[in-house]
Length: 227
Ligand code: NI
Ligand code: MN
View 1 (cartoon, rainbow, N blue to C red):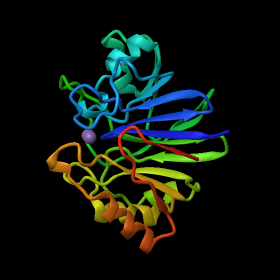
View 2 (spheres, rainbow, N blue to C red):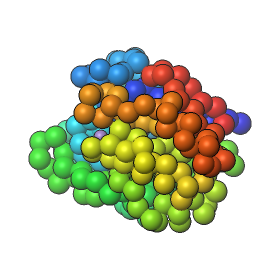
View 3 (cartoon, rainbow, N blue to C red):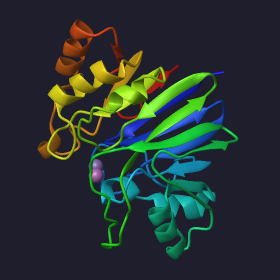
View 4 (cartoon, rainbow, N blue to C red):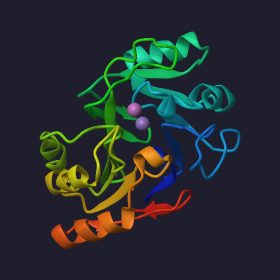
C-alpha cells in the first residue's frame, strides 16, 4: 500500500495512489523541463491548483483523451466545462471530499489564479491528500504563510514545496516552510524551468537537512519517491 510521487518537471507531478493515477498541474507542451508528453501520460484524476498557464497546461487535452475527472476550485471547473471537458469535481478552499482513492482537501495558497484567456480562476489552492494511512501536502504555487503550521499539525509524510523564487517561495522561505510544516520528507519543485526561477536544490537540501529532521529528495524530471 504505497503512494508514489513522480516529478515530471516544473510543478507537474503524478501521484500513484495504490494504482489510481492522479496528475497534478499537467504542463508538458512548452515546458522545457518536462520528462514526458501530454499524449503519453496516464490520468484517472487531474488536479489543477490554479489558473496560470504553467499549471492548466495540457489539462484540457489530457482530460478529453483520458476522460479523467478534473478536480479544482469551482471557477476553474466551470471553465473546464466550457472547454468541453465532461468530468469535473468542484471543491473550494478548506473543503475536502472522500474520493475512491482517498480524502482530498483544497488548502490555502498565496498566489494569483487568472486563467489563460483572462477568465476568473477563483482563488489558488494547494492540495492535502490523506490516503493509504499517509498524508501528502502539495503546496503548489504559493508564498510563505504562517498557517502552514496548521497544515503541518495533521502530520505530513511527504510535502512538495516550490523553491524557485520570483513567482513563489524561494529557498529561504521554503526552508521556513519546512520548519512550519515539519514533513517527514520533502520534494522541491517549481525551479530551474527557466532562468527566472533558477535555484540550487542540492544547496537547499543541505540547509534543510542541517536545520530540520526532514529528508529532502532532489529529483530529476521523471524520478519517483515512494512512501
Ligand atoms: Ni502560478
Ligand atoms: Mn507556476
